[in-house]
Length: 159
Image (cartoon, rainbow, N blue to C red; front, side, top):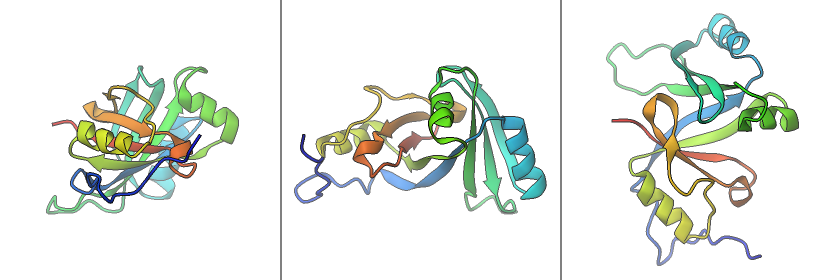
């Protein structure tokens, strides 16, 4: 099996679709304990919590640093992910690797277009069609074997 081609010459650029790092995902066995640590010890702000049954996770988005009083800059975000059942991908990750860095997520403005460019470069995406992510976002993942061992998430925010 040949390595995926990551060349951009002659191919469509990903740059128009790739906006920024959206968040860093951390797998945790106990969401409440992780929230307490990030909030009470590190002083971060919990800005969103939800249970995503489709993904088998209970999650929290945590903003790092103080809120921008003018509402301008997007804060750096951490996503804390705890399994809701033993068969979920996060439960399997915790079994294999223990708690820690689980994924790096990039914000995109057109998930289908970005996915098409990546597939055109020979990369495998985990889902044929986007799935629902945090707060109604649309997501897909680049297979870690095609991204240097890192699970890379593509996130198109809702609305």
